[in-house]
Amino acid sequence: MRSLLASVMTLALLAVLAGCGEREQVTEFKRGKYQGKPDSQPWANAPAPAELRGGTWKTGDRTSWEESIKNRQLAQHEHKRIYQ
Amino acid sequence: MARMKFLCDAERCIECNGCVTACKNENEVPWGVNRRRVVTINDGVVGAEKSISVACMHCSDAPCMAVCPVDCFYKTEDGVVLHDKDLCIGCGYCFYACPFGAPQFPQAGAFGLRGKMDKCTFCAGGPEADRSEAEFQKYGRNRLSEGKLPACAEMCSTKALLGGDGDVVADIYRERVLRRGKGSEVWGWGTAYGPGRPGATPPAAAPSGRKS
Image (tube, rainbow over all chains, first blue to last red; front, side):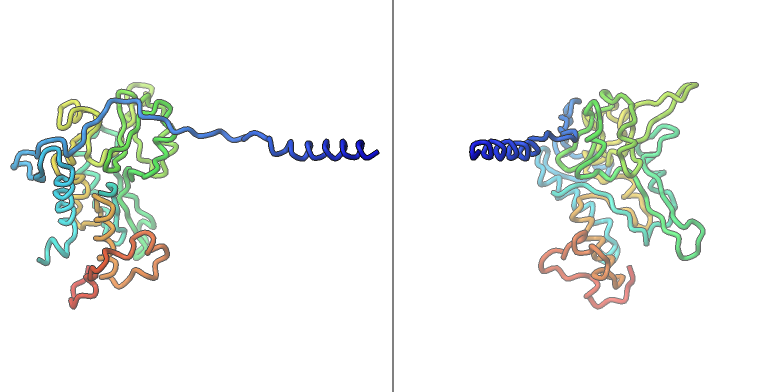
């Protein structure tokens, strides 16, 4: 009688645990990898000719390009652009 | 460097469409394609009319990149979302995914054939040799490689449209709003525009009667 009860309990436990084994029913999103051609970085270029009024930086130096762009951005701020 | 972003100040935009024209001219965008456009709400309602200039927002987690079946999108190190037109199949998924309607498709032929996707490049060209003719034909001018900012932002007459590094743009906008006497009461202000640089004095605190 006790073994029967144990078997029933085991079966019941297995039935309950079976719910935990359920598989994901939503699609797993996997981010794709860019398949196109490689692109170069803006700071890899030499600065544009002076008549184009671009920035000045050292070719290949990201930090100096960023500084140049940042100075250009601040020109959008009238408190610095006009009132100085 | 953070990420390149646009911000349009709705209090300043006067719906002149100068940004749209500058973009069309700078990049020689084909007929029927608008990489940038000005959206106006409450049009004609006195005192309630607001306009903002909208283009690709160069999302940090761009949905167009997620849905592209041929994976033609990439993000540059400075956060600009670009794509390879040689790979694009013109399916239009990116158009449906984009919350800003940024992807545009040139139409040609008797049956309105949908061409390859075209969108704002933040004036950063595309995957061709920088400043080359091929790059210009496919993607437009590469102003970032010339040390310049997007033409739309630089041409904006009221400086409503700001472009560049998100941190710098946020700094400029924060100072403007503080000068207007607003800021902290705006929901999400601290999250969006932060406390500013440590130790910096906001211009609004400076003794000045000038308005923004």
